[in-house]
Length: 105
Image (cartoon, rainbow, N blue to C red; front, top):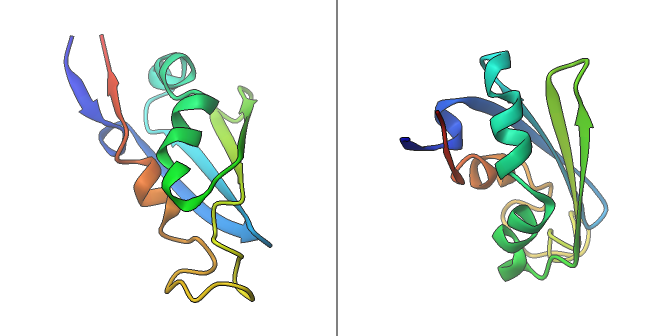
């Protein structure tokens, strides 16, 4: 089974709420919803943002929309008002999420 970057099968958008980043994840093909659900876990996403001090990740499954929503706490190094980071709103966080790899059948 081939391993592909998540961006090959899905797209994402990101935004912020304080020091929390919110990311949607939507497969291009509804058949990949289950693959993403099995492999893109809260633990994997939390580990992806650990270097930024992330403390918690919650995944919300939205099967009627064919999408997922991830909320990662403490991932913006203080957020837009408290960070010297170039991306205080966390808009580029979706690109980091899409860098994860998944194995597809």
